[in-house]
Length: 241
Image 1: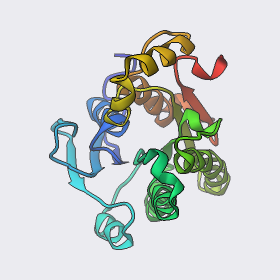
Image 2: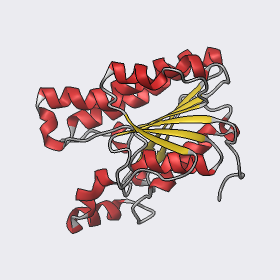
Image 3: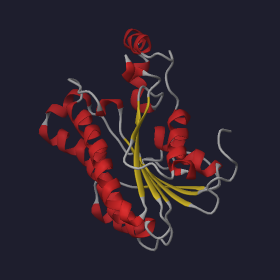
């Protein structure tokens, strides 16, 4: 274990998009480090949902304002907010209705979560970590909405960090590279495309959700108490090539 045991004991965390992939990995690590975690997203009882006695999984459609109202109704403590919900619709994103839906899920939902969570976060000087992407840095001919939304995540993170600083609430982001998640299954199963990815990745392997989860945990920990507004790449060096 890279962190002190019980690092987050007594803290409450909400992981949006926490029922699969990177969000599930973050939820599990936070729970293992002592936090009480609510993981929300699609298929809360599905095969990729995190399993731990300190995790409660529930369903949330991040596009529905009333769903956010129900989620926060009666919530009395929140110290950590992780925004990990994300979708990619590939070339279908050139259809305007799909483009708008991807932005709603990947970007607008972060603002919804932040606005709902801030009154609770400011009580204990909590923190927010958003999940951006290496596509925040460069565009994608195959997924224009995904790239645009993730670029927006970086700028929104900077803006919210400035706004929340008055309450000593920190807002940061991580920018994962090629991570072994259900979202990346198609690429991983394509030997030619996967080989090209590995050829450009200096560390020479696919990332695992735990690699990103550890970066998220660092940004939530006292070790990052003077860090806000940053986006931390977790990509095996992919952006350096």
